[in-house]
Structures are given as structure tokens and as C-alpha cells.
Amino acid sequence: MWSFLNVEKEPVTVLVTGAAGQIGYAIVPMIARGAMLGADQPVILHMLDIEPAAEALKGVRMELIDAAFPLLKGVVATTDAVEACTGVNIAVMVGGFPRKEGMERKDVMSKNVSIYKAQASALEKHAASDCKVLVVANPANTNALILKEFAPSIPEKNITCLTRLDHNRALGQISERINVYVSDVKNVIIWGNHSSTQYPDVNHATVKTCSGDKPVRELIADDQWLNNEFITTVQQRGAAIIKARKLSSALSAASAACDHVRDWVLGTPKGTWVSMGVYSDGSYGIQPGLIYSFPVNCEKGNWSIVQGLKIDEFSRKKMDATATELMEEKSLAYSCLN
Ligand code: NAD
Ligand code: LMR
Image (cartoon, rainbow, N blue to C red; front, top):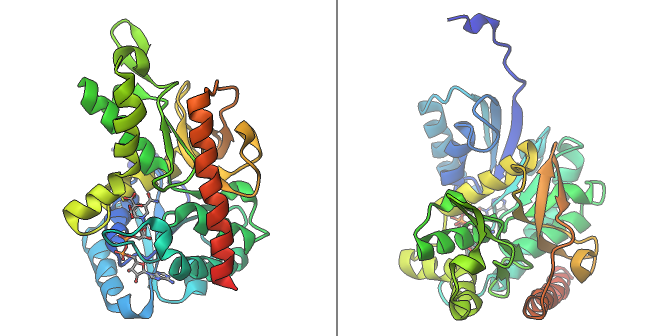
């Protein structure tokens, strides 16, 4: 009743590249159901893939039509990057090649960075001027950096990469260990690269209890576990999933990508931060010129790095080690492009 009085919001156009792939197939229904931009936000989906996947992409389009999502106001399925990027407000860059068992994420570097160089220009020329970009394809930080460098007119604040999956994995490990709801755990941090050098840090993380928020380090008094097994489990979770599924993570990656964009656009709850790969401004001694995962707060569509956190010697070493890997990846990426 009275629905004729509701004024619908203007649709937001969301691009998903690699949309015929596994993450693509998982994420497009999430976006069309409002999991990314909210249950009252109409969307238009632009899906890009390459010619060999064109038929599969058509199938995804058919399924989206068949699902009759009320929020979905249009679907473009194309192999033309210009058509896909035109008028896009949010770009979720998943297109690329996943690693296989036994590989590191940077082993797919030469194939993937050249895709990001090429698509940078299409986005720069044809997307909305305030388009927000999330790079998911690996090596995610370095692909995002290449995209940034080859799309100089896109504001650097608008180019990010996904480390929210690692952040969510860290929350999940803490919740399993002490048998609390995952929604009661907050403020873990993923520092650095979405790779096995990332540093999952619980020094500022808390758990909601009936007597208020308590530090994770107080509830889990086992430093040995927190400083070793917890860290390696999160660092190696992607590889563990590939080993188990013979395919890389997809539903959790899609869900994390929705979390990333939702918090960026709609804001993080007061007192809570999330991890995002963003262009370093030198915070915490991390050199500018890298896309590095930091703890961020988001408000009104903007992220800002959480400042003033105390960093101990153990953390410092790990934060620097992952920055060093990112510098090495950056020069490797440039050597692949030359
Ligand atoms: P997938 O192979 O199932 O799908 C990738 C899709 O990209 C394919 O349909 C392929 O045809 C398409 N593609 C290839 N080149 C393209 C191009 N130039 N333009 C558009 N599309 C192109 O792989 P997936 O499992 O969906 O994973 C996609 C990427 O995401 C991989 O690089 C994977 O390693 C990465 N990933 C990252 C995270 C993260 O947390 N950052 C998590 C999971 C997966
Ligand atoms: C993940 O973390 O699951 C993805 O980056 C896929 C991978 O290669 O590990």
C-alpha cells in the first residue's frame, strides 16, 4: 500500500569484469539483490568478459533476467571494454587468470597486469568521473597500482584493491577459536599485500562480551597461537581453499567484494574499521607509490586511514616485509609490461 508515494533512487551502474567466471557468477546476484549498495538501491549491471567466454556470459545474462530481481534495472553483457566501461559508477575488476595449486599469486602477474594496463584507459575515458574502482584479480595490489598509473585522471583515492577477504578470514578464525559470533569480533587489521606476506594483526581487535568490548589478546591468552598459527592460517587460506576445491575461493571473495564496496559507499559503523588496499600516503612509514592494505574508516563515500595505532617491533617487521614484497612486485610488473 502507498507504494506510489515512494520515489525510487536513480540506478547506480556497476561493472563486473570477468563476469562469466566463478567470482562473477557468485557476485552478480549479490549485487542485483542489494548486498553491495543496499536494499533500496536500484542497479544496472555491466558485465565484461573475453570472446572465448562470450557464450557463457550470455547464459549469465539469461539467468539474471530469469531471476527477476526487483532492483535490477538493466543488464549489459559484452566483450567490448568501451561499452562495458561507459557510464560506470562502480567497477569491480575480477577479470583475469586465477592461480592454480602450488603457485603464488604473483605467478599470474604477466598475464594479469597487461589486462589492467589496457582496461585502465577504457575506464579513464568512459566511466563516470567519480567512478570507484575495486580490483579483485590477482596480484590484486599490483594490478590496482598498474590501473592507477595508467589511468592518471582517475583520482588515486578512487582506486582500491580487495583485502577484505583476508580481513573477514581473520575475523572468522578468531570467532572459531573462542567460539563467539563472528559479528562480535571487530578491528582486526590486514597490513600490506594480498599474498602470503600479508600481516593479519589482532593487537587492536576486540570481542563484544556482556561486560563490554574485550581485547582479543585478553580473551586468547595464547600468544604462541596468535603470533604463529593464526597468522599463517590467514596468510595461507587462499591456498588451502584451492587445495580443497581445486578452484580458488569464489563465494567468500564475492561476498567480501560486496562488503568492501558497501562500507566504502555507505560508511563503516562508528568505532569499527575495515581493511582496504589503498594508495599509501606514507602513513605508518609505508612509502607512497604502493597500494597497501591499511585499516580504514569510511564516511560519505570516502575512506581514511585510521591513524595513531601503536605498532610494536613484531608488527613493524611484518609490515615492512610485506611492503618490500610489494616494491618487488611493482618492478616485476613493469618488467612484464615492457
Ligand atoms: P575465473 O577464471 O573463474 O574467472 C575469470 C574470468 O575473467 C574468466 O571468465 C575469464 O574469461 C575472464 N577474463 C580473462 N581475461 C579478461 C579480460 N581481459 N577482460 C575481462 N575478463 C577477462 O577466475 P575467478 O575464480 O573468478 O577469479 C578471478 C580473479 O580473482 C583471479 O585473478 C583470482 O586469483 C582473483 N581472486 C582474488 C581474490 C582477492 O581476495 N583479492 C579472491 C579470490 C580470487
Ligand atoms: C584468495 O585469497 O582466495 C584468492 O586470492 C585466490 C588465491 O589465489 O588464493
